[in-house]
Each structure stands twice: as structure tokens, then as C-alpha cells.
Image 1: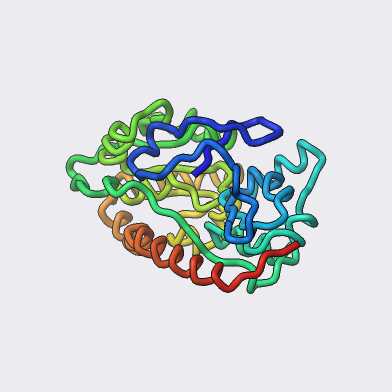
Image 2 (image 1 turned 60 degrees about the vertical axis):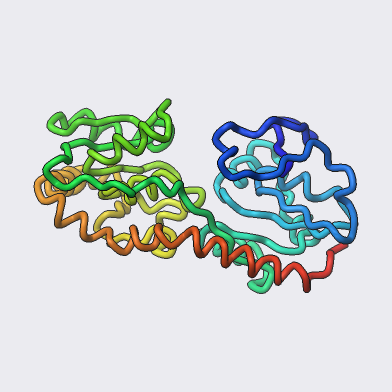
Length: 286
């Protein structure tokens, strides 16, 4: 693993985040020797341009965030997609949203492989029963706040808690007593916080942006996905009231989502094995 600093024109070595230490990943501080026929270079879409200069290694792009790639391309005025289509050996996708995006931009289906991810295993280990749950709605203030703020202002019977500057232990604690998590922001990939909240027993309400549009990414009943948030504030408020009053009933509606999340680590291991097998048969692209 070669960690990079953001906002740099060229790769610059950076120390790994302390939160990553639990994965025990080897850390290298140089890319020397990477450009060989025996090498496979995997970069996220945010560093897509850095996959282009190499000539001998097999290049793989892992799409974690479609929206971030699109936004960065607009801001910079440079879209590397034509070059990526020609020079990337394989595209990995973390979501159905990314899969459909790549198909729509002309990447052949056989050049796309699903390699997802998984959340921390401690989420959902100790779920509190209904009598310990509070009328609390959690939200991420860094996304979707503009559409959520009118609800926060009008619904004063519900305690709203922003998820910001919290440790993992604090996140698990607050998710363990809340009844609902709301996310009206963009969903550039299969987001982490909705999965953490659902695993902890929260009912999850989203919009239909990005990956939230796809049942494959967020497999929850459609009544918890809001098509046009500003036009449906009354329905959302009624839904929140019903969740707080009949939380156990709504909790059961998320059983499939929790089962889906709990199986992600095993699916990730299987995805990686498939990826290794595929790469053994992939020829590098010039």
C-alpha cells in the first residue's frame, strides 16, 4: 500500500491514517520497480491520472466514488476517460451505481469486476431493544444538509444529532440508541455510514441520488427512499413519527439490509480471490 497526499500533482508518500493500522497492511514509501510486467497497479478513481504514465504494469482502476470523479473532472476541465478506456486493464466497482456508470461510458461488461468493501465488525454486535431507544434522528452534516435543514427546523419533537468529530466508539454508542438515520446527500458509492447505522439498529431514510437509487446498493423498501425531498416534507415527517412510535415494526423492514451488510466481509474475500484469478489471465494494455 502506497499512501498519497491529496491535492498533489504527483504521488507523494504519506503516513497511513492511524485508523488503518488494524488492517495490518504493508506500507511502502516508494514506487520504484512498479513498472514491470509482473506488477499490478491499483488506483482509486480519485487518482486516475496517476495510472496513465506507466507502460509495462497492468493498470486497474477501483471506482469507489463516481460523483467525486465527475466533480473533479468538471472542476479541472480534464476528463481522462478516453485515456482510461484505452490503458486500464480492468475496472473494479464498489457499487451497482459505478457499474452502470462505466457501462454507460462504453466500458465493456467483461472489463468490469465487482470488488466491494465492508464496515467495521463491531457495528451491530450489541443492539439495544426498543425500550432503550430514543426519539433521535442522526445525520451527516457534511452532506445533504440544505434539504434536511427545513425538517430539522419544523420537527422539534425529534432530537437531531449530527455525526461529526466522533470516534468509532462514539458512533457505535449513539447509533445504538437512535431510531433513525437520514441521508439526503449525494451517494457517490455504497456509503459507509448508512450501513453502520442500519447494522446498529437504526431505520435508514435516503433520497434516490447516486447509489441510493439502486436496490443492489441499498436494499431497503422503496417507502424509505424519497424521490423529491423538498416536495415530500409532510410525508417524511409522518414517516418519522411512525418510526418513532412503531420502531420495532420498522426495524424488521431492514432485516434484509442488515443481512446484506453482515455478509459483505465474506463477499469481499471472495471478490478479491476472483480478482486475483482474473488478473492472472489479463494481458497488459499499451
